[in-house]
Length: 418
Ligand code: SAJ
Image (cartoon, rainbow, N blue to C red; front, top):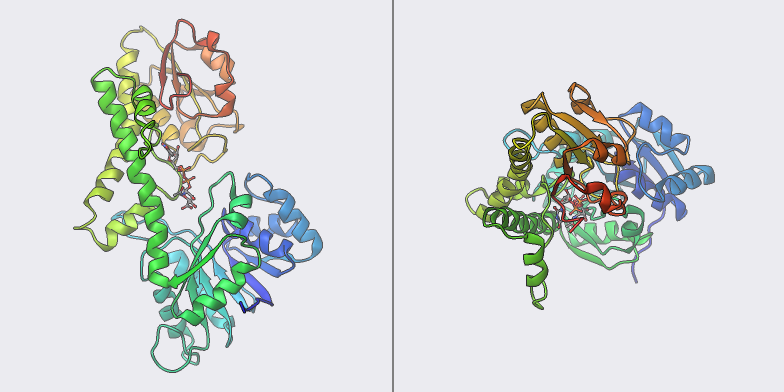
């Protein structure tokens, strides 16, 4: 019989993963305390509000708060289970920066009790879950942690990487399969019981390092395949072919599925996680490293192509459509589209750049500083432009009448209008 989880859960980090996880657990009757260092976030959540846009999240959070199952705090309370869902960026040298995980561990240690479960959800290099156990042991020498070979562990430590797609988080959180890697089989079983509260997918139990690596592999797999598509797009441009047509034809083969080229790879995961693999095995990660290079070079390539086109006009006006890192979301962080507009604006101050991004109300700070960039509605931006650069395949742009593009030079990085 699978064991059942009962008790209170503290979730450290109320971001894109922590908050939806808190809401999903709380709406299933679990007492959840969301913990964050950001007071504004804590205040918003305590009032049943959400600090970012994600479909269906606001309803879940306000419902859970109204039911009394979800509260928020800047301090970590005693709990039966702790979930660490803090950022794991990479440092200058591409090594994982674990300072937030370390800080979360230090917050948990003073309130840790025998029988507790600690789960690391943050994407991390292999060995990090064991490191969390070591950090806890240093701070709580009175407890036996599971990395140690001495006796029966008092506390259970596991890794359960998040795998949800921004824009579909509330659905995928419940329906996706989950990998749960324990520092021991007992740790995995205890953590799995927690996720069984809401996860309708299969829970795959394994060891912690395999779970850590599996998550990195998922995103590196996608990065490598997007790099292949992006490389095909620059090759096709060079030899005068339409890459979308080439891929469409190739994908009719039953065992071929080339992904979609674009202006580069954005987001907080796919452009970051492969580096954690490179970091642990630099000499053997040649393909993974090369793919990162190909995808990172794509925004600059787009800028070069646009600048070349600008040469045809005396005082060109350029419309850049879309700023988010992918379609139909309002998330501008780590977005190649923002980088492209910034590089264009910086290298050609004489360009008149009109940006259309229907999902945001103002330009991000890094673009506001340029005198030659303004945010406009798509129809106005396109009407004013000599050159139209499509950067994000929002549905909003897909449905735009093609007649508006007549007489303009169009550079469509997403193949939306072909
Ligand atoms: N992109 C392309 N071509 C494609 C697919 C994507 O250029 O064919 C670009 C997108 O425009 C975007 C970037 O890649 O800039 C990443 O977008 P995405 O939708 O592939 O992924 P994310 O970063 O939103 O979410 C990923 C997901 N991982 C996988 O699909 C393997 C998600 O399931 C993970 O939970 C998430 O990373 C994470 O947190 O790790």
